[in-house]
Length: 449
Ligand SMILES: [Zn+2]
Image 1 (cartoon, rainbow, N blue to C red):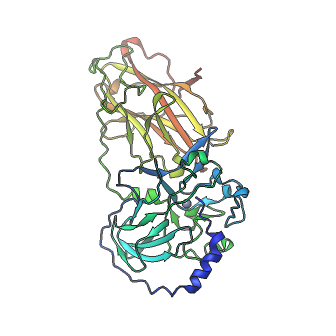
Image 2 (cartoon, helix red, strand yellow):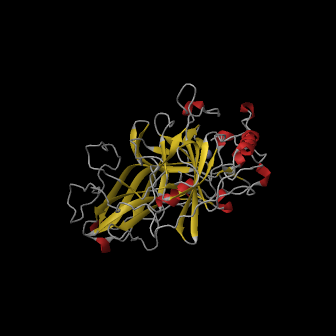
Image 3 (tube, rainbow, N blue to C red):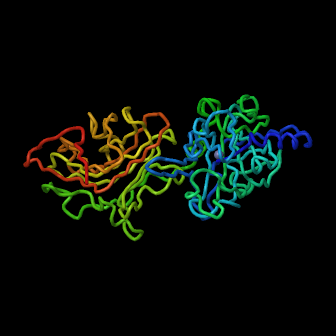
């Protein structure tokens, strides 16, 4: 995270004076289709941005467009900023990718698509920085930027998707939370990776004194998208062929799925307790991006589903779903669950939340016309587990139909971070002979001890 490029500008200028001018860039016409891949991975390691939580607050987040609490006023470490404001006020213009376990040092860095190397920065960033131009079409050119590496390519060289760009260099961690950086000394080796619509960042932030086209790695006062950066992982993820949205061996209730039996639970493994590798996967995370981490995991001894940090992705694509068949004669479904919202959103304002939806299992279309069982986002269920109930009325028209329920994250757009944990899910039938009972479109919630 600590690019420290501004503190190294003088060193760089010396090198610049010694360097011969870079030759004119070759231009390689693109083919009609470009294959994209991620800049790290495929080597048996899982990579991700770093998101560490302490005291319930995200204290370190190396995602794109993030203002990072880890960097607050770390004056003792002698950090300067490019913008003469606190670290927590500047926006990360790329992602810092780490191995989830072990040091990222020496990890192979790969070209994310066919392109031509237009620039290699000498080793002052720290490490080299490589900029690759990708000609998506005659009118669409985008650049990928790989930082804190030992480059194995040179300017004007053509690269192909997945071809080696270099290796991640070793870096030591000197921030406020060494406990999240195992190693002695604490390890901060990572790839800083950007994608942007321009090659040369000189002049983008004059106040940053960035005399080099690489740029400072951060933006201020606005988020980097304002200046022509893009969310690099979202960009690539949107261009990588997806596995079809197979809704995995969703466990069916052993009881009759054809005729309503009062208070039958249609969800098996609703508490995620048996989610071992030998079991059928009871819940399916849908359309998650680039190794954001498992959605079903063990926390404090409980297996549960945790979806989170939607805001940093700028999209609401983390979703958890399970399907079942609504028995004929069912009048109402009572959807019960435990949930936990953890968020850095301020209190007293609409915050991130998740919605609960009933969807056709095949088409994915909502079956709730006046939806919804979602949360009014002015509620403040946060920081502790609650029990929620959502009554889905008038499902008799869906008897025999295969449906799925889904928890879908929703954001309020303020760049704070939230996660949503779900556990103890049940969907109980209420048959038409039993009457529809009381019902509400919003869940009732009560605190759990
Ligand atoms: Zn970075």
